[in-house]
Length: 289
Image (cartoon, rainbow, N blue to C red):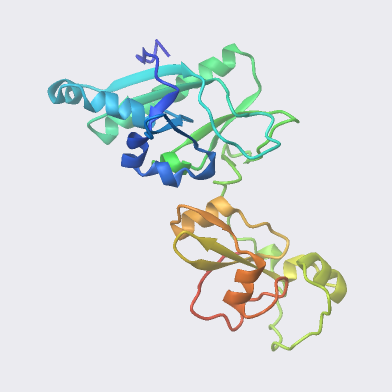
């Protein structure tokens, strides 16, 4: 990191809530942000990351000094989150090395990004770890490009996809082309719709077994609720819905699967029997496959 011209500094673990409220992430970060209220009823958080703090520190510098050249910093801290249970690789506290940079042009930003990428590769190479760099979702941090350096392990908590062409991404970012081989009725004219009685059979797998068809022949209909609206996601029956991708498509801050009561409210039918036909006044997003 020194070779990449990063300046080392220490940053606080407990951060002022007003900085996070100013950035909008006080609420956008959701339940993983560990919030604290002191004896004077002032808001703080046990920072999971330090974008707000370092940005505030840089903007307090003289504008002339701040704008004359790129600025890169790095820190080794113990950030905190309020994570979901059963996460072994990243707990409530963990050691994290962060690096932040500030630029006056996109070209300067790209130059530093590549320099940091090379620095991280050198770090993993010197540690003799088996790793792969993959495209990743930027999440609440935002931005146009992000890569994760993933150490491959049987005990890992994430999954990546990779291709011999050099493409790699985690499942929250990975994209695939058209899959004509998975068409339900390839080469045939679709039949006219007809009602089929499926008593007590609610999942795609169960309906597929009941009708002696492959799950790929079905459309899985998932009802979700965001901070803005209800939405319906349609995916092929043998696929799983990726909530992070859907949240990005819907431009939502928060997203969750709808409750049984709200599924009835949106579709007019019981949970487990939802379908796209006849839905009105609700946004529908379909996987192109």
